[in-house]
Image (cartoon, rainbow, N blue to C red; front, side, top):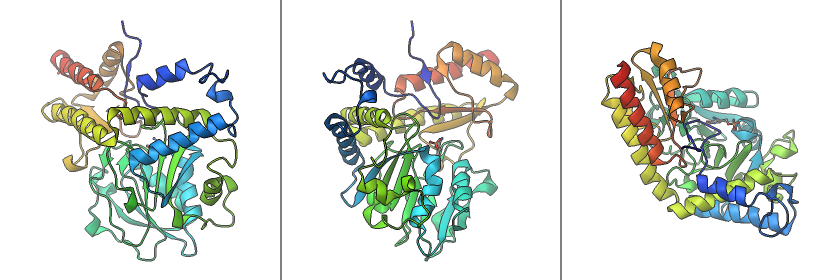
Length: 361
Ligand code: PMP
């Protein structure tokens, strides 16, 4: 009897079961306060403690030094597409972007409303199956920042290097790869990540910003989008997304118990590796991404006969393997296997895929 399915959704995505259980246990009465975290004043000692602990644990997990502010903002990663240029453009008004897929494009389109955007490199000609190597980038030394998308959630394309931008601040949309492996934060000017993959519930967005980049927002920047204002107020200029923040904190605690991001790296390498190996060794399934740039988190694949897509999804659903349908813009299938997807879920998927070939291939 199965109560929890294996949910391969790209986001909102599966959360660690122990986190959900703890949230359930604490739902009505958080540690004797007689109320749910959802009902607490964000100014209460209890919530401030929850918030501070979450930040402290994230700093520890990701190796974030005191040179950086950590902000718990709202509006998802998409709001950062505008918030970043509004805060960082400064006097130059120029920003460089790398285009590796649908999320890069969205960031570029939004930034273009505010900035002189230079697309310094693009892999669109390849159908976004590769990452343009840095030697080929046409960057500008006077850009206010360079923005890239380390993991393209829809395409399943992931950088295997951190760009070196010298003195130009590097900005990364890490929504779908945050905390999946160790990253040297000191190489970045700003990192942002929508929470609904590796962190917690949707709506929340975590921003890690080098402190020297604060205080440069354009005059017309909405107050709620001004990093300096958020930093000055501990992300509580207004009422923050308290319950999401609390859940993110539970996820961070869980991650620490699992051995932190180094343990996630090992697990994610193994999980994605076995799925790619299975796909590559099959005549029936295919993944188009250049192997070195294959995502550990989002694995799109196609069936040799597209007419079988419906049957594949139906059979998967009957086995509790959910949300495998690829993004509407790409078609085919996509398995998102973030930190919280147990290895057993990947094994069950591979089992199912192998059986499906026997039956239909
Ligand atoms: N960037 C990336 C890389 C994403 O995967 C997503 C969501 N899938 C977004 C941005 C947008 O996030 P949100 O829906 O939180 O605005």
